[in-house]
Length: 172
Image 1 (cartoon, helix red, strand yellow):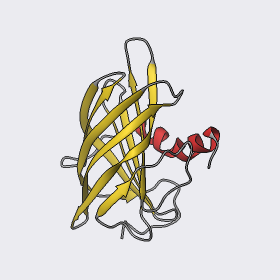
Image 2 (cartoon, one colour):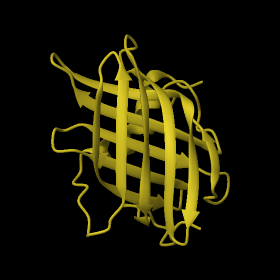
Image 3 (cartoon, one colour):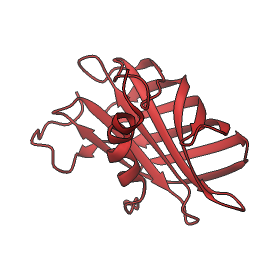
Image 4 (cartoon, rainbow, N blue to C red):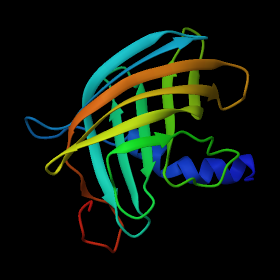
């Protein structure tokens, strides 16, 4: 089991990526998400998709114009394959392979809320070089008091290189 600090370090690349510019060329990857629970909302937008070959991780991040964001980190066993990826809590668990961790951030009427996955799943599909998926996660707030159910999908996700990664290979 990891400490909360270790879990936050594990999600740091996702959270940082969520707030970088996620605009892309016409036809770029799209991510649609809805959350229901202690707060309710939705957004859809262009997403940034990177394959970090040296650590075997696919990252999908999206931010809307209101500063809401969702980030997904998909951890395959050896290569990225279609199928089910069970969610884990990055604040408690070590990376599970195959597995997926999710993070989200959005504004409520009173605060900025950060959430991370603690259960759920993602179903990954592949068509040529592009990936798509549907997902449903139970997300708990970083302070542990609130939960939301995050559901959604992404499509047309063609991975680009991971910043700072020494591996030049694209997702296998």
